[in-house]
Image (cartoon, rainbow over all chains, first blue to last red):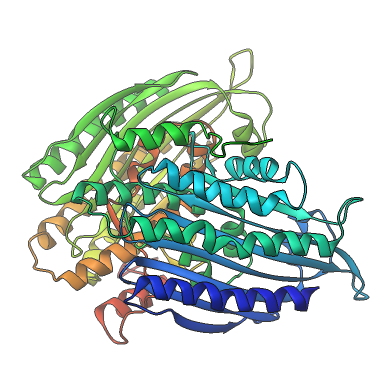
Length: 304
Length: 304
């Protein structure tokens, strides 16, 4: 399974970066290969100052070795070995009319010191962070998520949509980071599903990433925008930074377990502002976005 | 003691904000009074888009009530009441030639449920974060810190200078946030010092804040600078954000114990950049700064 999933994400990295380069039209991804001293490594691809994307990265990595003490405590396990691989991406468009997107799909194995597999699971998801709200874009994104989930069982979309709303939440601001999508973790063998079933589920979600996001980029990338709208985008990007540095488990574990800093913090936006106590005018488009972030809503026409 | 120290910091807030307004020449601080539901409140003063200061804040607060569970765990105490007051300031100058400065002086009391004082201490310090290194500025700042410490006992400067270097450290980057200053905490009754002695020490340090920082602002504020130097400042400000959101205990406790978000995050710089894997040219002024941040050095001519 680990080779199968790793091959899959490497192929997916090619597909996704090619699609982003094609729509960007100006810049190409720059590739960095890196190795991890304790075992494994990765292939980081970053695009900067593009025609559409101001900054973005699409990384794959496969790392292994003894599980770090901080992670042992987190997973409540003893001194085990692990293997983890995944694809992780964040794209920050230049235009405030195009939402930022984040996605991640990963597979984890744990072994006892004799090398026997003792646990394994999939995790991941995708989510959207708009600066201006085009309801039809958000509905499209969620409909694609739902369709990808539905053939794998009833209630999956609803469950993972809620987990996404719960996870990407800036508790200190009482607002969501964005308008959500899917978030799932610890997808393990159950009476209903084996690991092959979860592989099929995760890869179906990942295969639909471009279907969910690209039509939105296509439709919004050439819209005009003002300096004030750009400023609002930079202020909202500050909230993105706050989430990633204060709340995001993946980022914090990476920073605390000697991960590759530049690949982890590649998720941070290029230009960001913090103003004191910034409040949008009431009834403005900016206030409209905040209202939706205060109480995450259902975007699909039919949930059950 | 609590009234005496609170009166002191309120007066100091006036002195400091007046001095900053005088040197800024363009903008004045905007004041926000706020109350804390559980008890107490504060007076936040913020300056934005000034002639010298792009963003900065000088806050006083005095809060009290039951100690939050997260803080009980941190202090390893049971269900007690507390009183805390302090002055906290961060100034982000517009010019990359002028360093950012941070300072904080605070007093803490704890009571059992009968209202009896069971513990009390002072904490605080001041530290400098330059974007370009003028060694004479850093030496001046540290000499003023040392002089303020020296009349209160041998070894204080050396001890609190080291604690400052240790505390304001971005472990995930293996570099200091800035060039340090003083950091002290849990200044409690000892055989050598009573709380009145610590009051005298802390207020002498605080009284010397303007002596330490203002001559640097005066000397560097009108230096010319380039777009590239400004960009370097914004990238370094990213490290400031990383420290405050990932490592700073004050910020994180504030965010997790329902503090006033805008007063806590007032410390974040106005315009910030993150570039992927940014490296200054070797032997440049930017590389020179990084060298000093990698291994904090002694700035005073005579330590012992």
